[in-house]
Picture 1 (tube, rainbow, N blue to C red):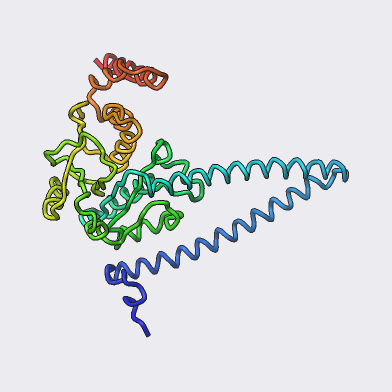
Picture 2 (cartoon, rainbow, N blue to C red; picture 1 turned 45 degrees about the horizontal axis):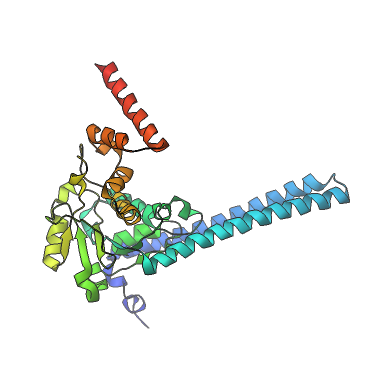
Length: 321
């Protein structure tokens, strides 16, 4: 008989406690699946009875007409939904070949608390680019003309357990690697570029041949310099976004994993860093002078709305004075 490690080569990566937690989660998942199935069955029965009551008092001709119109509109809705789904899946699959390679380094999970890991997992849910249960409609990737080729690396242990809890994780249209990026891309090590604010190299352009790494770390202030140190030890290149060339940050200068990825994808689309930063970085993180200047340089309804927000903010300040 094969051992658990032989059946699953990733099993040794999990502690005994983590393995028990994973088994418990699988049992709960199966129980939840059975419950959902039963609920769907009851809902189907309810709708059937409702329909029977609706057509009970109709003549044969009226009944056939109602059934025909219902089937027609339902088929149209289903066809449209299927077409949209296929288009989204097609775009995301094409991104695997032509999209900018962006890696989220999940190896740093060991440095985070359970709540921080949970926060990062939910950020990953927005990054996913999956098409499952309508999820793709909420994915920033599909808001861009050129979706990226996204990777989750170092996906094991507690991080893997948390990700497995997300609906449809197995169907996410991104690359999922249990190995660290340094192993997954060992034949392309020269192309790796770790994005870290501690780097002295300013990222002027995105090279489609490069593989840009974003540190999956929620509380960076507590681990300042950790990603730079890691990149140096591994002998890979580093760079930082040229945010300081275009705006001043107020308060926390830390961007979420989502925001960094969206900035990169926006730049792929526009080839303009300023536009990318002002479109993605929330106004609350920008100095007011920068926000107003950007509004003055821009046009359109979005900019008018942003200008109104600044005016309302000024009025609140004046009222407070």
